[in-house]
Length: 275
Ligand SMILES: Cc1cc2nc3c(=O)[nH]c(=O)nc-3n(C[C@H](O)[C@H](O)[C@H](O)COP(=O)(O)O)c2cc1C
Image 1: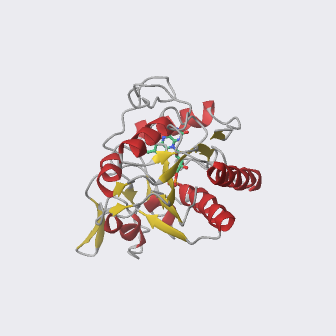
Image 2 (image 1 turned 45 degrees about the vertical axis):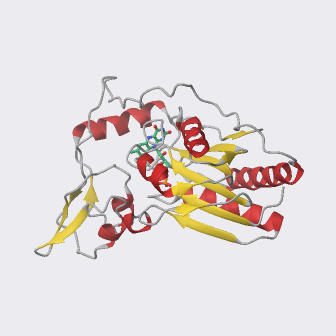
């Protein structure tokens, strides 16, 4: 099949999904000698216009895993913005060392529903946005080597394709089960849905967090920053703050992070489909 454009599409509050999706797309664009485009829908201002792809497009589409699924606040945006119209797609999820559970199969199904033909997929390990102790430094060099070799395998597969195959088979359960229930260090459900980052006295009001929040939930009022809207706990504001003035002090959230650090520090593996 002839591909004329490769597009890297991603939601990536802390940058790991972007890194992996862009590298996959870059290598594929090189393989086909076609242009590579990017569509970063992390910020609200980039979720205004919808986009329709076409049959000769190949889209590498990535999101992070939140609670074992596609981030729930972003799912309606994916449905609203992206129309496949016969384009090929590679669903990609990144996860922070616990599990990607059913996120990849959910993303695959959503893309198929949106008019894409999914031809391959991958779940890649990345440092957990909640803790540098979970998959520290990943994706590392070895992970990125796998990303590149996977990109080449997919490019070869598309080159040899005479007709559109059925949806790529990926790991996951159907019908898609409920979201993963975060647990605390005591093994009981940790409920932190309403938790928001606290802005400490060290804040220098540079406004970087305002511009980094994917939900547009941080505002400046009377010379003071406030987290007022929905918080999806993505950690974008915390990671971008140059003086580390933002932090979570919610005890249920901190207990969940401690539980993850205690139970999920082993090295998780990347998984690609087809292998
Ligand atoms: C709200 C939230 C929920 C998460 N849930 C999971 C999860 O269920 N399993 C897992 O392994 N990692 C989980 N993670 C870790 C992210 O999937 C991981 O940090 C991801 O690579 C972040 O992508 P980004 O750097 O593109 O923002 C979660 C992270 C956040 C912020």
